[in-house]
Amino acid sequence: MNYVLIAYDHSDDEAFNRRNACRAEHIANVTHLEEEGKIIYAMAMLDGDKIVGSIVSFEVESEDEVTAYVAKDPYTHNQVWDPKRIEIKACLIPEMFKPTRNPKWIASSTKAYKAY
Image: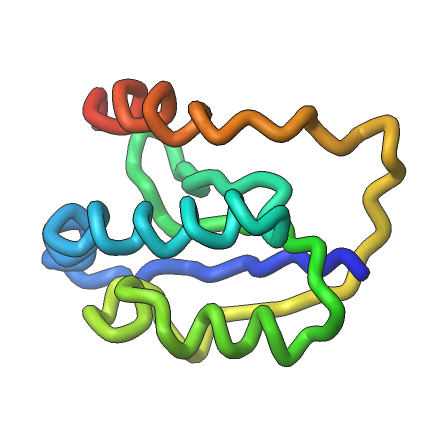
């Protein structure tokens, strides 16, 4: 089953600094799940040029797996994501729209992220 996680960041002035401080740990968590084939894609949400949250698409057995991911992710523990503004939705992603698995996406996304 496919699920999408929509997680908005806290809106205080220090949220971006907290995001940067724990980003490496967050990426390690995402990479592990991507290598297991549980994450289809992940991205930062933008408002103009400011990162305001995350969107993660999962292919897992149940919503409980996504909930467990959120509970242990560094962005949760370090108060990057605002728990009042997290949504998990079931969705259907047709095979033709699923990207080819490419574990190297993390490295290329890191370069783009540094621009922010």
